[in-house]
Amino acid sequence: MDKGYLVKLLMAMSSKYKMNIDAEVLGKIVNMSSFRIVEKGTVVQHIGEKTLNAAFVLDGIIRCYYIDDDGNDITRGFSIEGTLCMDEGMFGYNESLCEWETLEETTLMIFNTDDIKKIIHENDDIKNAYIYLLENALRYKIYRENGFLVENATERYVHFKKLYPKICSKVAQRHIATYLGIAPESLSRIRKAMKENVSETE
Image (cartoon, rainbow, N blue to C red; front, side, top):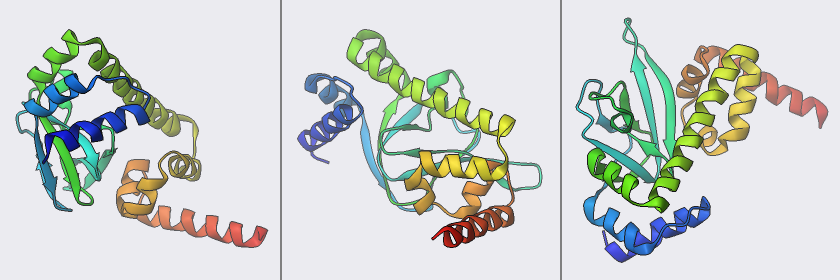
């Protein structure tokens, strides 16, 4: 991929999320990263693999999921444009805790976790951008925990759909169901009831 194009893309994304990052710094990150366009349905990192690298999603959607004792996969979360993925190593884990799978063709900027941590500590703009990403991730976690504690399944789905319309429109319902902690059949009933309610009010 062309370096100049990538720097412009990253600058546009930093502006979109109100982060002020200098082009020279972004160029440094581009130089230390590799870029990969991954086909839909590809597992880019498995449970137990070393977390030497992390990635930033430039385009596409990735799902991370656990596998329970019965072999069922349970969605932990989704990574979309402008978010991190395969990022356990950024938080001190030596091995991946889950599977990371592309749900559509996805473009990744892949970097060594130790190298990016060094830049984070050395550059205030990158540090602020990283804090922004962490804050978003924490809000994501709090929102999900809150949903399980105080919302019923329908309320959790409505809230999720409002916050992440792109995911709802592109991701298989069975993945959303396991994320919400319900069976796919239950989600189908919720969606059907919501459609009927809309029809009745029209």
